[in-house]
Length: 189
Image 1 (tube, one colour):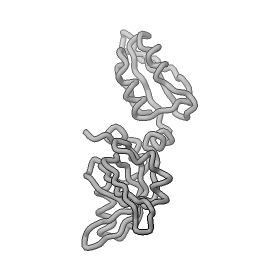
Image 2: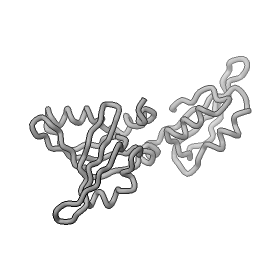
Image 3: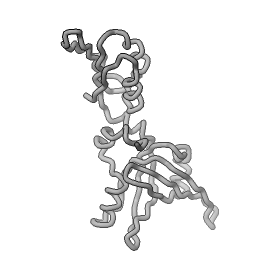
């Protein structure tokens, strides 16, 4: 799979385009700007004749690979995020030349931060109290996501306990909760 696969639900809520969707829109209806979720694959920095730094940044998303030019002001502001392996939301502008989409990077945002801002709670299913301590170690407060703990009894009855509405919930935290020994399932609310 692709590193962005675990963000699929969050990306739908954020209404970001895939590269393939945006490239199609740019070619067919003249769409010039978009927000795309992508993972950095490479960065090649260069210096212009005027002495300004710029870079060609390679990206990948589940629909393919693409490259964007990043001029000095954006490069300076976002250099620490533009490292290979980092997943981002990138703001791009496009020009279509001879059926080729050429992208200019206008801004970047860490995907984890953007996904955490889209409030999405979870329901954690357990069969006994064994995993509760491990669950509590993985939950982070100071967020806005609700968390519901559901105990499945021996008779199959479900008992729900609200843990509150102030948790940070990212795909990584959700994945860590699913990995806790004794957790039956973790579902989006």
